[in-house]
Image (cartoon, rainbow, N blue to C red; front, side, top):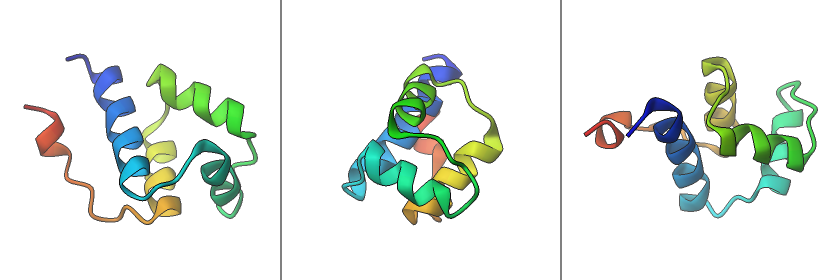
Length: 74
């Protein structure tokens, strides 16, 4: 599996664990200064091409502060 696919999978899985959709995520990201609508956020994540600081912000916004990426890298 390539890293862009892994990145996308990690965020989507963590969102699913918390029952958070892209509309909710885009609203939560506004608290951190990311003012993108749900379509833009969805497209960015679905491409799997985003900065690490964006990923960290997503994790913080959705309350995923204990993400273990090792399971995804196998």
